[in-house]
Length: 80
Length: 138
Image (cartoon, rainbow over all chains, first blue to last red):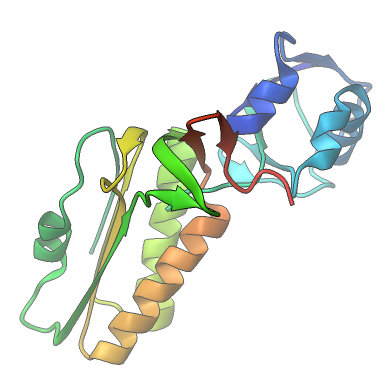
């Protein structure tokens, strides 16, 4: 399955000119995606945290991913 | 009951206060967060806020509704900026009205503390010698 991730803040800088398309074996979870991203982009390991949002809500590691999900990388937030 | 906005234009604490006022509200607390001129002794030139808009708004709405449900607030306004801000400009305004002052203070503190933890908005600070995404690294 091919998914597309959306990145904000420092996570966009870390992905650089990567096209944000990621191939995952089905069934895939948020934890699988995270592991793959940390391997391919070790700079993610340096962040204070890395969370994911699925379709506009914070996701848990065990949540399943589907091709049409809106998957967003949430590095440490700093609003306010 | 709640007014949540993510705005690219100047924020108005007066507008937030006006929204939450009512005859039942004996206490109104307004928190105004402004851009500071320095971070850890480094001079800040300006900063930039970037947001995952739909989720930033929905997370701020959740906070506002919790301020009502869990803290007894009557009305809550949360306005947050996006885009580029200069030193002294307002980044966030939170106004809370409650029957009494303690609930208003507590709800307002809860709202700004939670906003800083959960709302997907990212701040980049610009210095004379570079720029940094705030809080990204330990």
